[in-house]
Image 1 (cartoon, helix red, strand yellow):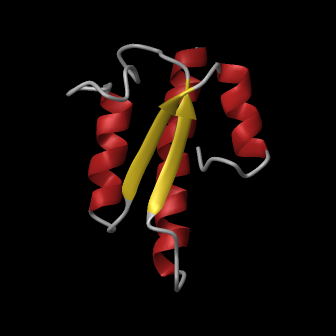
Image 2 (tube, rainbow, N blue to C red; image 1 turned 180 degrees about the vertical axis):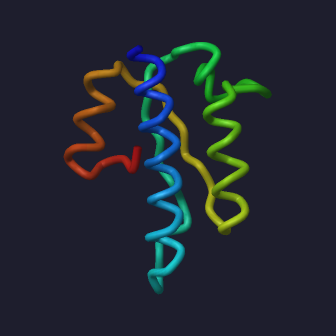
Length: 89
């Protein structure tokens, strides 16, 4: 159940962020993603296949002219980064 919720939250965040940011002038051209390693969704940021969630994020955001900055953090710290505005999702 937690995996499904995390997946749905991630996708909704990407869609919302790309819609809102795409319409703003002077929008930042980088989407910062912070997460723990959680295969097969997200894994090594330097791997050819970093996980299907990261690959989806890169494909979706590339269509809108954005790059994805994906880095590994402990899950609780990743949540704090997003809450404090230091990361997008």
